[in-house]
Length: 343
Image (cartoon, rainbow, N blue to C red; front, side, top):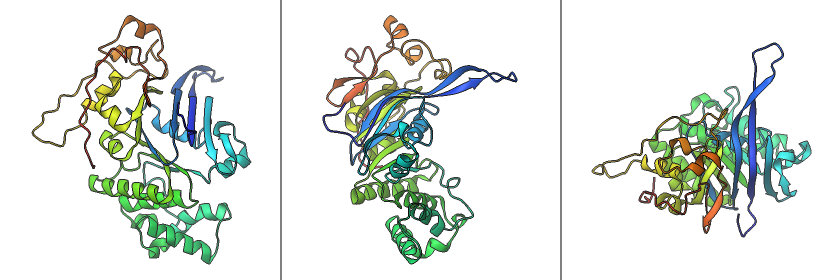
């Protein structure tokens, strides 16, 4: 998909969770297609925003990439400085130990993702101890340095998570992810649980850290305004599939998939005098355990043709660095939104 070798490349990634019957034998009667053939790439040093409705498979995709879940099928390629180009989904235990030094995850909930019985020294210092990076006074010095980098006082290392606000807890989570100086971080809705004013601080911190350490992000979010602010490119998911991927400005101003158009129409305009007119999609989101034939979006699409109901579209380039999964992409002229600067 790219002329340059990406840091992360996902090819036809699938994760199907089995549905078992209620009998004593618990036979498999079906599967939930949480991730159903996802493909994208992330270049070194950039941020790819991953957006879509709840339940579309965004978080599952992030967990598959860092191998918290094992994929059902597909490949996750990562360009590790020690191991070289590795398929994360097939990596053995020793390879995973090396890979996870360079691939980290920031969880959505800063309250649930911190052990209340551990101090900040224990929380941030644990990956350093496990990987034999530092111990003793060197460990304390490293944790103090990390706390300063994320905007917290070094003296806080003796405190427990309950002593901190939501924004401070998320800074702790970011510090834990940074402890081993990774190349790549999956940010799983890192600001959705925070107040708006705190969201801006955390987003600016993530951007500062990216510039300072050369980080690469997969940024998962619902809020399109947040994604617009932080992302270089955006991938849109619908029922386990990527339906469009493009540079941020191109996707916001000139969407090529009807689902992307509907999402963008719901973005509030910062000008209070402008009346919003969101597109109301008919029907319900497709059931990932029993998706429709052809294009999964076609039952809700106002542009659909007979072909959409029977033939599954593939993700293909329609312009330079602009990919879309829609049979009618070249024929449609869809409404975008004005790109805003800042949060």
